[in-house]
Length: 129
Image (cartoon, rainbow, N blue to C red; front, side):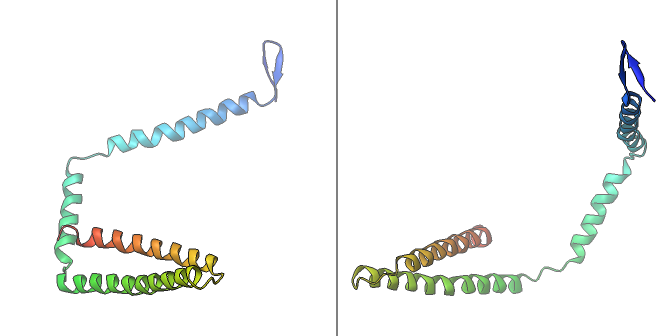
């Protein structure tokens, strides 16, 4: 099947137009049906469902605060250990002339990364007090 436009033959011109028309219909038809099904009561029903779900969830405040404190403690202990290791490697390198520069820089990078994580978690969880 070949289509002719001004004397030039395009074998798939009709197929391209059919595919374009079908894609257009698939894009337009769902939006038309969606506009027909909109009701005013839908938004209130959705909000009521969220309110019921929120009232069913029990918030155990002291337990969550204790978990947050435990998480901060578990972030702080490795932070202090990495800080001591970084300092010890720096002293070993500076005073005693040991060749531990790569280890010192790796531990410094891990220390700074963990310090940022510890600070961000602390600000997000405990800033509003």
